[in-house]
Structure formats: C-alpha cells, structure tokens
Amino acid sequence: MLRRLTTSKSGNMTILMGGVMFAAACLIAGVVDYMSVSNQKQALQGVADRAALAAAQELVVSAGSDTRVSAIAASFVDANYKAPHATAAEILEGGQAVTVSISAEPRTFFPGPIANGVSSIDVEATADVAGGGYVCMIGLDVNSVATLNMMNRARLTATNCAIYSNSTSSKSLWLHDFARVNADLICVAGGVQGAEASFTLSPPTEDCPAIDDPLRDRPQPDAGAATDCDFRNTMVLPNMDQTLEPGIYCGGITVTGATASLRPGVYVIKNGSLTVTAGGALVGENAGFFLTGAGAVIQFGRDSRISLTAPRTGVMAGLLFFEDRESDHAIYHQITSNDARRLVGTMYLPRSKLLIDATRPIADRSEYTVIIAREFELRDGPELVLNTDYESSPIPVPEGVGNNTEKTVRLVR
Image (cartoon, rainbow, N blue to C red; front, top):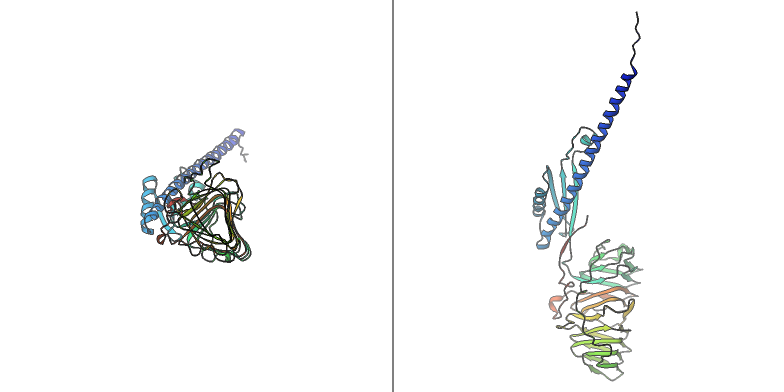
C-alpha cells in the first residue's frame, strides 16, 4: 500500500527561518570581517606614511642607501604594528625620495569570502626631500594664470638651481612658440603649457606644493615719514655724469644719456620710478634700492647700461631691489636693457610682475642672481641667466634662497 509523504507547514517555516538566519549570520560575519580588514588597512597605511617620513629623514643628513632606509623603516613599523608583517623600502628620484611598502596578514574572524579572498593587506607610502638645493627663482602668486609666461624665443637658464611657480593654474608655466627653459629643477604648483622640447635639461614637476615666500619676515628699510625726502625728482641729464649718495629720493631717479655712479648704501625710491634710458648708465657696488609709494617701479630701457651689486651689510644685505610689501598690486617692473649683464644679489618684488624683454643676455656676468616676484613675463628673445657661484661673491645670500635653503621632508603619496 502506497503512503503519501507530506511535510507540515510548520516544518517548511522552520526550514525557511533557518535559511534566513544562516544567511543573516553570514552577512553579519562578512560585514564584521570587511570592517576589520578595512580598519587594519587604514591603520597600516598610517604606519607606512610615518615610516616613509622617518626613512626620508635619513636623506636629509646623508646620501643613504636602500639597506639603511629599509632598516629604519622596518624598525619604525616593528615598533608601531604588532601583527605579522613584512617591510621593504627603496630610494627613488636620485636619492630625493623613499617608498615604503608593508604587507601584513589580515585578521578575520569568520570563514567566508572575505577570509578566503584576502591573503594579505598591502600598503605603500612615499616621502621626498624638498629644498636643500639652490633656489634662484620663485613666482609667488597662486592665483595667476601664468606665474612664468615666456614668449617667442625667450630663454631661461638656471643650470644649477631650482625654479618654483606657485600658480595652481593649468598654465602655471606657459611657454609659447620657441621659448626654452634650462634648469636643474622646475617645480610647478599647477600645470605646464608647452612642448616637451621646451625643457632642455630637466622636465618640469607638476602639482608641487607651493613654496612660501622665503623673505616674508625680512624687515623693510626705513622710508621715513610721508614727507621725508633727502632728494627730489633727481635727474642725471645727457653729458652730466653724477655720483649719487644713499638717501630718500622722492619722485625717483631718472638717468638719461649720462652715467649715474652710486656710492654704497640704501637708496629709497619714493613715489617715483627708477628709470634709466636713452643711453643712460646706472653703476654701483654695494648699493640696494627700496621701492615704495606710488609709481615706484624699475624701468631700464633697451639702450641703457646697468651694472649693480647688492649691499654686503645692513638692512639691505644681499638685496639688490626690495619692493614695499604694501605696494599697489599689478605693477610692472621692466628690464629691457641690452646691457644689464651684472646684477649681483636678490631682486625681491613680492607685489609686482617683472617684465624682461631684451635681445641680449640678462645677468649672465653675475656671480649669482636670485629673483622673487609675484609673477614673471619674458618676451621676444631675452635670455635670463641665473648663476649660482655664491662662494666667489662677497654679497651675502638671504636666508631661504640661494645656498641657504633648508631641506624638508614631506609625504607625497
């Protein structure tokens, strides 16, 4: 006799509920393990970041080696991460960066796809050494379309030093036509517009951190009260060569068709320009210019001759030009002279644009030249040459530029 096999409704419900509870338990277990692995990776990444910074510090004081930085990184990780792991480190970028890699065993609590699918937690961090080289040119303005804008056949040569552009624009460094840059390091906070062939020594590094104004805390020279003047509307006229004394020059200085020889000291150009044109010449050893007030700009005409070195001592030590930090924004300083080949010292123009437009080299006969400006524009076909022979010059280099830059370690990824 055949019997019908039946299953009660309550039995079906029990099986269904058991399946649901099992699935829920699996889901909860998966979530727990996923969160555990995620937290472990986050913690391990933090350890890797700090290990990379610690290892990169070795490069500040010595050339280092893979073995040495690996030992430093491993020691740091061992002290800060107790689960089983393996650490490796490698020096990159010609001794200027360290990458630290860590591989650790994951800690899971339940069997399942998380436990079976994750055999290791792998993280990596890189830290590099910034600064420490010779800094000879900084474009300060982070908002400028192009902190360094080079036209036509303009040339910039800085074979032993670094150029920084703080603009975050995609055209932070903008090279038109046949413009060329020849520098050891080109560090751009934004992007570069120009052909690869425009860079003859080293390609630019984009997305660099902006560099702070290294002279932002440098005390300004005393310009006296608003009405204080030692000289007014000084003009050196054709065939009337003059020797000028340090002091406050209200209305500026204009040199035309004659030579103005400068005695050592500080020249305050107040509410007027420093203009040399029409065959005029401005020559001086250990003379520095503080530019303040309305219209206090540099205007060196194409047929002028300029030969200057900065003061060796005093408030303007090492500074050839110092622009008042309260000056009006968007002022142009112009060097278009075809005979401005000796400019020894630092040109500090934090509020203005420096326009260079000549057909012959600028500053190429200087032991060293450093230029800091809000932004730069090189037109037509000038070649601006920034030498770095600091040791052969008695002119001191201000802290933060030239050979006085400090190395700093930073995390880059």
